[in-house]
Length: 303
Picture (tube, helix red, strand yellow):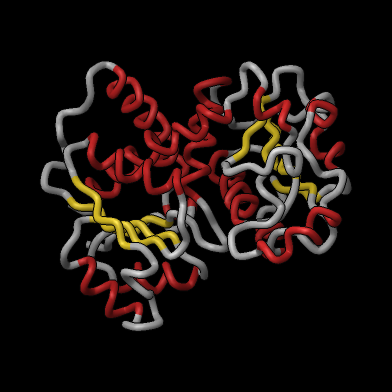
């Protein structure tokens, strides 16, 4: 039997992803009504962090604990994928000792090679190219607030980074229109745009992207590892802030999201971060529930 992994949203079918969203909402309700029945008892999640993260570690570790399992945290000091031991050897050894692995790393090729040699499911908890777990939380949040995202219009404002590229995949898998507004030179990969040109459009300004949109999304202008570019990027991204003025171009009931951490006053205004009714904090919490549904799915597929 072929081991199922979750390296991008394309690794699950649209029907599987929609089922995952429904299950995430069920698990959220279940937790609030007294908890789960330890379905992951004696199961171990290996968590490999070459890039640090508060939300990713807490959501995966808490999720496994809530479902009766345990999580093993391996920082960049504990394992060096491809630098000390070859990635293929690390994959063989780690997957022989745990039931499922999540990796947060740099190059997407690292996680692809690890998955190729892993005997257990591998989850992409972020690479330089994609951040699919965050998309699960975002879509779950939209469904909880507005129902199905199918046929809706989503506006991406800012850097064409791993989040933007995951939104491109999401447009295909969840069947919505995506408009992307990026400064010149910061666009997502052209092959992704081309492959999804029936749903994804690069537009000339944030206002054009936001016009009539049902959801507006942004992220930091300088991602982890790009800190030395911060000052220059602030100049390049002038006019790309998600704020009340930009939101006024969207649909009257539009939502806005940010995967966090946010630089208030840069890519998003402090007023929107603190506004009554913002779903950003619900979006952050939903990492926990969506990832529990994902782990459950992968373990059941590979049992």
